[in-house]
Amino acid sequence: MRVLVVHNQYRSALPSGENEVVTAEVDALRSAGVEVDTYFRFSDEIETFTPLQRVMIPVRPIYSFDDVRAIRRRIQKTRPDVVHLHNPFPLISPYIVRVAKSEGVPVVQTVHNYRHLCPAGSFFRDGAVCEDCNGKAFPWPAVVHGCYRGSRPQSAVMATAARLHRATWLMVDRFLAVSEFVAKYLSQSGIPRNRIVVRPNSAQRRGLVRPLGNGFVFAGRLTPEKGVSLLMSTWAESGVWQTQRLVVAGDGPDRELVVAARDHNVRYVGSVDQARVSNLVDEAAVVVIPSLWYEGFPRIVAESFERGRPVAATSIGALGELVTPDVGWTSRPEPVEFAKMLAVAASDSTRQKKGDAARARYESELTPEVTTDSLLKIYAELQAR
Figure (cartoon, rainbow, N blue to C red):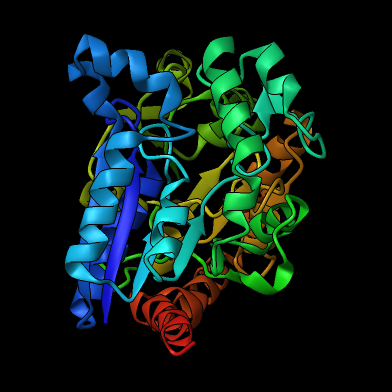
């Protein structure tokens, strides 16, 4: 089995769980004996572009001349059985789906977000969920509000790409949605439901699971959609800080909110690597996810379950289906209710039982072995057609 994995890596200045998922998946496929070739572009490359390359940036989400030629040559040289696409924006463009199909190679795409309906990919604007573009023939609201990187011109390009490539997306053989929630919105974009398979993110095994530690931990980008403001305000209101500590790992524009909360038993450790995140989770009793946007399948959920830790989260997006009562607690993303949930999670006598159930779910659904086996079956099905 030969697979060509295609992905536009997000900027390193804002670490992305999606990048980590792709890297881990490539490693898992190779460990399973699959011959994996990768075609990666990096958004960081833009900083080194020549003036002529910069002029062409607005065209690339629609049609990237360089990448179309390069991927066609790569396919003709390596003859993969499957092309596996993740994120094509902003440098690669969805047109490579047409390239693969013209070469007789089936295509799968892992869908991590809502880019098929929302140019920003997040359904989030001005601090709240926004579905203004959902159902529109052309996503004008995204252009008006400059939803893609705060730029109306760039948003116009992404909106145009979304409109022009609707037929391109219909050429994809299988869409691998990371959750049922993502699958629902993907089908609303016009993708036939029988082409969508729900395949969750995984997490690497990190050794023996320790008994629950103490306090809470948050690990993620410190950005508005991740709910940092909700967590910091409700942490103080909940009173939990008087007996338990909150550790925050990550970086981003909302870091000052975290720093300002140090008087409420908040420890800020900054941006750390995955091994350190795992250690922080081990040291905690509860992992908290206060997201305000429609999370697709945050990798920290799989990592928490792997370490046998229950999760306290908002019920928005896929979190409402992932964090069931047997493995944690959820509340609406509303301050009073979220503060009450934190207090419950801090004193719940069934925390260890929930952690054990989280680990059991990891073993049955989220190990690299389980998720890789499901992917290989999809590849084999397409190869046999």
